[in-house]
Image (tube, helix red, strand yellow):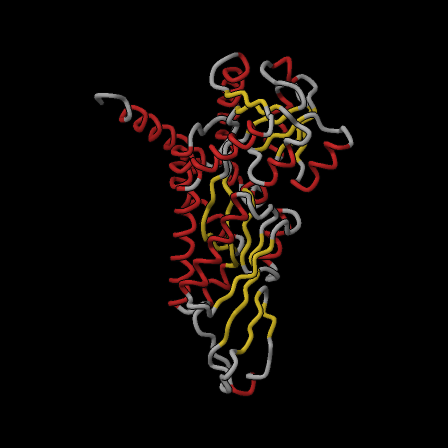
Length: 347
């Protein structure tokens, strides 16, 4: 970011440097001022949480850097795991990807996707803040720098027929977004498999899927409701996605450039959290207007049974991860209890 200085003998070059392109500004024969074009990508559509996030970040960076840095946003950029590899290998400057694609790096990234642990946006934000130091350390260990996190709307179950009991789940062929959620839903009687967004629609069209675990955010929701007319708002999890860049690239930036990057990332994350309640409401309104039958869960056999199994699932996860990661869940539950008590009338 900021000004990038080159010796005079390199002033005629147009250099491709590990995920960004540097062009000399016209009218600058010394080459001391340059505009950088950074590739920033997400594997999700433009109007999803992830897509909106990278566009917000790009706008903040360009504004704070007075146009010296231009961000080239790319959407539906291959698979989530490919985005991570592209950042690590220097092919991509910045990428945003769901937490599930980072689990292979460290189990701490399963936190936001633990079944039924988080029950509201406020709780999702509290858990994200508690876990942030652990996220940053885990990413740094793999040469990655955390820019910002984005919350996703809660995951619900899209299906061809209504799902309101465990019997309805039996044998249901369900797409999930990570191996853990596939294993969880399989443990309650369904046939679940983890698939990327690009694989969902072909599988629905050929009849090999009966349901999809997804928030149905943005374009994804519009595609799902063409074949899946029922949505059970079970609030399985409030997943996070992570915007990342190479730690080496970040460290190599001048101090002023790092400060502008940090400011853009902070502003983006704040906007992502602030806009989430309205996004959830808009998604639900769009579902209902298009004829999707939305079942709001909370009580009943299915919801209560899933939450009990979720508690056992989280306890097993805590038993096999480090004491630090297990402690994040305990601390989160303590702060959630305090927050719930404080919210009571007269407390």
